[in-house]
Length: 88
Image (cartoon, rainbow, N blue to C red; front, side):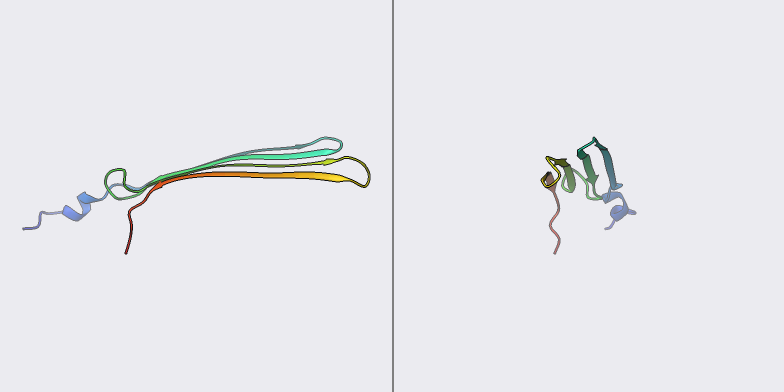
């Protein structure tokens, strides 16, 4: 015999948090950009079976070494941890 509201009571409230911060600047012959990001979510399935966490860092920089030579660097790092329920 089915209990009243058993499907509704099975699921949890899902939530997601997205945070971003960035810094940029420039000197006479240089520029830079740095950003930090995080995404943390917990879905509607009960327990810790549908968590998703993503953290990333990005850095871009340039420098004019002379009137004819410019150098630049771009670095990206992403770390993803997930424990997702398989669908099908």
